[in-house]
Image 1 (cartoon, helix red, strand yellow):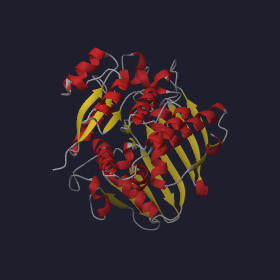
Image 2 (cartoon, helix red, strand yellow):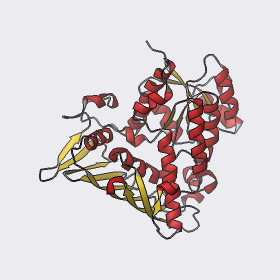
Image 3 (cartoon, rainbow, N blue to C red):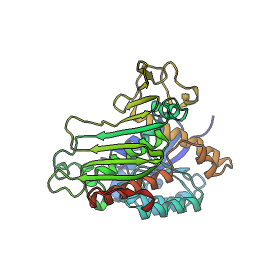
Image 4 (cartoon, rainbow, N blue to C red):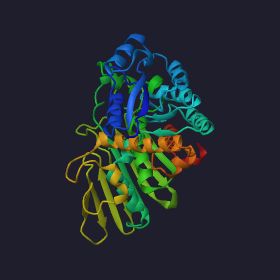
Length: 386
């Protein structure tokens, strides 16, 4: 039996949300064991959080620099680290572990500014370590099938891309009502210059690029902050111009009552269209022009054998959010094992569909371009000029 990969974690201590998601996802297929963590910068909280998770006292850290150096020196040191901190800490933590020669699995967005994103890309390339960015929606089985349908030309040349991601949880001033998740996501010092744009707008943008296989060329956008006193945007409207003259629109909002997690994408080509909704993840609508719409299902008839590793239960048994993260961890494990067996990090990542550090840099360019366009009253901004 193959031994489990040893996983470390930075962030994700008591009361955190996304850290728990990553831990569950890493365990689903039994390929990782969490053995070390700097779960908080507060020593007492770090210790309590680590003990609750069953970590040995000597592998509980309150300083991620200390963790990176000590784990790199151990014969049984971690194979990879999961970074689940607020955005402003992604860069220094990832830098420390990359320079220690440890593979990185990092939550999105890549960093809190473009400069750090580009620097991190250079560091990762120089250190020859794997870097996986957890845009989890790209690992949903039917998202992968949608990408395959587009690549096969089954909807013809793409004309239009519509993507939206509305939520309602920041409709009120919840950052001042004790909501810890709202506090850091609306704080420029921890979130960076983008609020809703960085938190969920980047997911929508990444999904549009992933499924279509297209690169964005220009954007015209308007950022809005509807809640009085809020420091960052809570609503995004953007017009998109992709390569090959493809047109697109993106809307993301966290002040849209009645929407819990409404990520949805529609892609229309010359001969057909596709529609997928995250809240109904086990169905994909495929509409060949002039013919009845087909409902494709996860693991159902016509589901590709090449994507079988992304499903764990028979068709009709719902899978979703946690399994999407688990698929990223599963594929990352394959990559780590290949590298441990002597394969090149660059070669391994090039053939993988995992979100890469280049996708993170692209996401930061998108954020930067949207902010620049909004500041210029919707002026079209070229991504190449960013």
